[in-house]
Image (cartoon, rainbow, N blue to C red):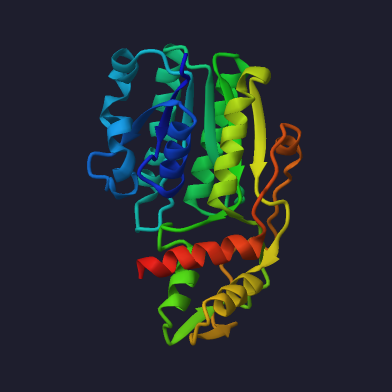
Length: 292
């Protein structure tokens, strides 16, 4: 029997890639979306998935029947001047309703996409941390397995243009006159979207062999490079004429200076990162070049 997966955030970067991979591996895909969400990222699979609006959470499981796994990727970063209360509603209230409904309907596993940021860094990171505590609460009572997927810095084609990696790539491809940056000493674990998807697929394959009610998996390459190295590599691979002005911007308050995934738990399941940094970055650049 085909496994049935419900995805939130399917119209986003991560969710759309996950949906395509799930269909390719013969999963039956259900998804929750906002009524006003753009469907551009899932146009090619729109007829192969079962779409429901977020307002349908309470009746969703009666309509679609047994769901094996929920993959929660929807989030609000607060980048569009949302109120703190709106960020918390999106990142706590909504997934909590889904957690409760899924638990009542007998969903076996909830995969939560989490951040590596310090919980007090901003409202987004604080809200994600508080939902994580709620997930632990549910798992402690063994009502539903809650697996927390802590994601490092994902990049790839057709990402949100407001994200740092996409902004740098597009700026260099467009040869804007100047790209203002910090000194770039921060180190980040940049991982290509294809490797993130393979990690999720590994977790789903191994789901029946993992009985842990709560477990965390860090998803990244396990290596970090400086922001400066990332930008300079993009600049070189794009043959850009953009002037890079490192040090023209201050670091943010509470800036994370070092971030790197511990991939031990994932590797124990047989996963490993396939794409080396420069090859994957160049592949992303060439795909983005077509879109400009």
